Amino acid sequence: MSTFSDTTAGTTARPIDLTAPSGIDRAAHHRLDEAWLAAAWSHPTTRVFVVSGGQALIDDTPDGRTELVMTPAFEAPLTETHRYFLGTDEEGVSYFALQKDTLPGRMDQSARAAGLREAGLLLSPRDAGLLVHAVALENWQRMHRFCSRCGERTKIAAAGHVRRCPACGAEHYPRTDPAVIMLVTDEQDRALLGRQMHWPEGRFSTLAGFVEPGESIEQAVVREVWEEAGVRVGAVEYVASQPWPFPSSLMLGFMARAVSSEINVDGEEIHEARWFSREELQAAFESGEVVPPSGISIAARLVELWYGQPLPKPVV
Ligand SMILES: [Zn+2]
Image (cartoon, rainbow, N blue to C red; front, side, top):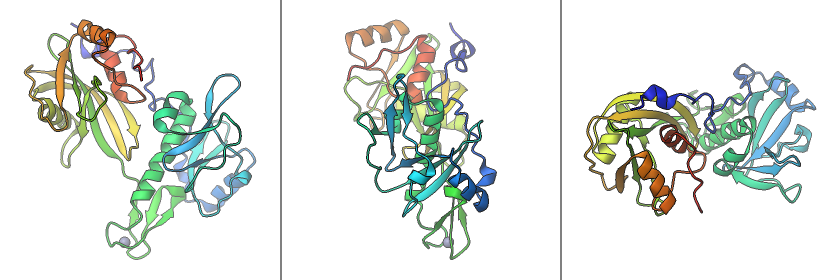
């Protein structure tokens, strides 16, 4: 029987999408320095992209990569847009995102609008990191236009990372809502996978849920598994995290060991849950009975850590 340590070995060797180091220094100390920001904005090496509704333009390069479409700042007019300073790279290049109501026109045929779910699978860790930062800021700005203390309209500050209230002086910072996502295994090393009612036919994945006020993340893992599947969990081991700005979550990934095996789904969040051995899951993949979790979600990576090999690509 494999241990958690065996199961999680290799997490550093195989980065999980949206968790890999981006190579970008967020350089937060520059956010309040208007003179520095102005100089960085007008510097010829500075790169700018537009984010709108969670999307940005991406394009394929001649050598087969996909990258964010970025321009020098002088090609990106600031009119009626919000400017987010995202950081600098090792060469000293500064990166900004402009939040606009619409994306700019496509510069060539292959450029296309994409959200994180698509782009996160294609972009380099640097570009994926820049986009996830910009999308998270955009989502927060969109939903926090008014002061939660006094109700007045707030103003953007700190290069997109603060909203200030002119009436009561409150400063509001970007929200990140912690959520736990866990692969539960039993003493036979079978994995507990569940499906939600609205998911595509056959899709099974890990259980997940939000951390509640006054709760540790370990307690949240135990509670969510009990609520959703009626299974008791003992040992809980953290694996990795993933920003998930849909709209503002941080997914905290765990391996968890069950101490009971009877399943009793809640019928609301989770419609069906089953224990799978590796052999059973492989057979279910091959027969098409089970569709693996897909895309950029950490769920697929947690299942892979236990499964021991890459999951088959789902047939769409
Ligand atoms: Zn206020």
